[in-house]
Image (cartoon, rainbow, N blue to C red; front, top):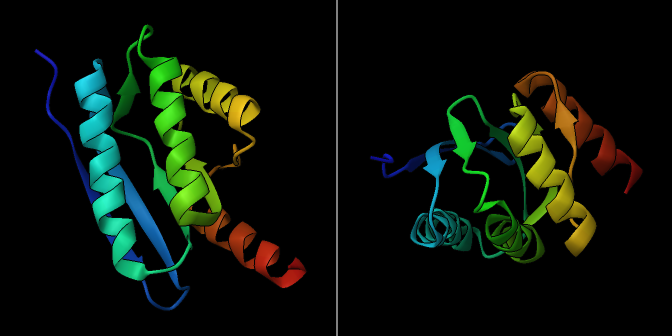
Length: 128
């Protein structure tokens, strides 16, 4: 049985960004909608697009649900995010992230660590 997931959101006030740690095994459309709803509920509280880092140590996607997940991933990026990086993606997650990025023109940035992701976001802000 697939576990129903949660997402640990941490607002990093010093860097004005969110670190999201999803604990999900996405297998069904219902999983995608619940996962999306968790992001939507949290991100709406800021009333602006936010920069964020997603740590994916405990996140998986089933092979058949990836395209549907990618559509909702893109909605999160289009509605709620500005600069963002993923950390510790599995190969399958990277595949679906890159596919979603190509289909919907949203970010696919990766970093080796949360610290590297924060530095990259700060650099992107400086270039803006």
